[in-house]
Image 1 (cartoon, helix red, strand yellow):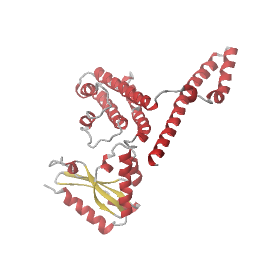
Image 2: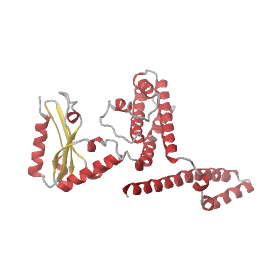
Image 3: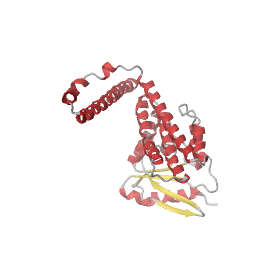
Image 4: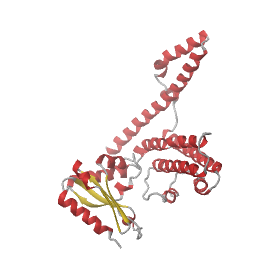
Length: 312
């Protein structure tokens, strides 16, 4: 049986000899670190290049049936992982370092972990609620593809679209709960069970999506999960916002939009229905946008003040 850590040592020794100034960090994560490795487990290891030349270290190979993928994570991507902008945060948070080029590189990497540790704080709640909402966006496209008359009617196509919807939902759930998953594909469900915020019928709908032989049942489960998830996001946002003051929120709006209102009134007086139709809906949309935007700005200011207060 191949010793994966012997392989890792060979890679690190090569870096020390030929790329000592070109690679900042080497680390590993996953089943070997968590004590769950089997005889077929590969070693999940990565490196952070320090120079363009450092990317030459990337390598994929197979030894005795075990695949190895020594892949690069640029610093900017590692920062996105640490900021929950990518949801494989565990790679940065829970890895074991095998090589560090310098104390400055170590400080920079540990700074990423400090960022991750702070993501559960109230100052980041609004940001992650917004990311949870954004993550659900692709669900609407997938649902439409399932419902379009011209879409394929076979069960396989339906289950593939359902998988994409569930993946977006799992991503949204980790943002909404301000956590990250520590295990990958096939293990999200068991981790979601521990989350305080999740759809009440999640287990039932997941079973339908994975095991049902009815295309309609799978589509309905996807639709209901999407609706339930959006309700949870709205509820969490409302909890954060507290009591709403529309008088304060809309201050200055009328002056900004008076010109559009005048065009609407003129169209109504002249009986020009088409102009009135589009102006009316434009005004309605602008009202909604202003309500949301102004409240987001107020919340951002409140959260920033709270963050400064915590620091002081």
